[in-house]
Image 1 (cartoon, rainbow over the protein chains, first blue to last red):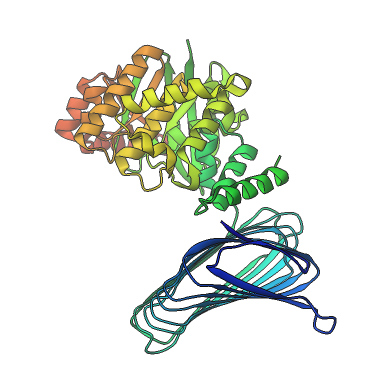
Image 2: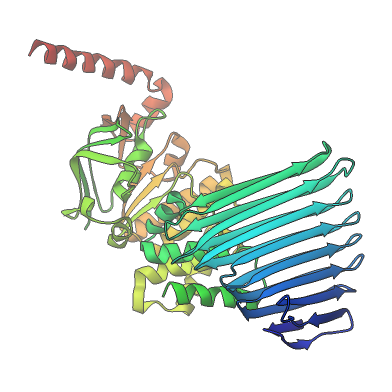
Length: 264
Length: 261
């Protein structure tokens, strides 16, 4: 596995020739750390970003036909981050993202620039503070695919605003765009999801969903009827919610450890 | 020896009466079957026994070995040895069957839980039910066919070893082979454990595998007729209409008497 870890402005990396990257440390003037990554060929990459009260801009470009699994660990306490994904012809970028500390504000723009570009995005988060996510997916070419699944949980002072906007302009036929957004509210704070589809072309396949609430009563009743008490049942459901779609063992362990920490 | 005793139970949901002065007693070793038209409260009965909070008990009681079940939470009722095999078991995303079953058994056995005997028993039970061993790595009931879901319920029954088993339409969604497997396994378990068994069903075919000692017909929230297996033949031949007519006549009489008073 290729690895890039950036703590504040210090980089630790272990990568093959399939990946190039550069880091522009933050200037006094703008205080933005800029990270540019280009993935030339199919590979897996683990990217960890750690900071306190900083601003980030992360650009990741996927070359034509490259199939990439990106395991993104973000611990950006009180920080702001902007991701830009640039996907070229027939490239596939699958992002598995887990947030260990609450980010203050995050923006993500995915540019599906050429035919066959495919973004699969799985985001898992346990929000402990106020967080804001603003995601934009641009289907800039026909036959491009996006599938976003955001499974988020709020605890303690956690409160989430999640806005996901997908754009398909006219003439970009045969695009597939799905977004599934769910927030499990465990602290009775007010959360908000704005799932937007801006589609100007008929010949597309698109869907969106947004769900904020507690765990499903039927699921809890089923588990309880098997002798599992509510705290354990909730922990099991939480584990399922946050671990679904994650097959990487390191990320699974990180999520499990966060769950254990929060719900001993 | 265990006894489940339901006395004069009246239950409402959103203000609508579903069970009306319902009474039934089940002892260990007995097999009871409840039949009846749709919407008459059969599934409600099983969920109320298990403690579903969506239902409001207006009057009456549910006792298990003399203990008032209304004072117990759902999981506490399960720990007493009551098991409900559901009509439509939910699927749970992301929770693997293996994780779920391990949690189920470890919740029951607490400190006595041992992984290796659990795995051995699980494999043996999967074989008994003709289930693919691979299914334990899938999400709970996720992508399962109707038959697989029902077999998964019976698998949990085997692992939990309950003393009082409630099976709500365990035959729905089963093909003939699966029905035979489920029927034989429930019968075997009942004989081995001498558990009390309550079957909710619409069809005779399940009762050909699991022979009930008592058959009850339920209408409008209570039992209107009880008997032995010959009652199943009667229902098969005549349907519920005739009983319904008789019941509505008797209800009218009761209402008229009330007016008189």
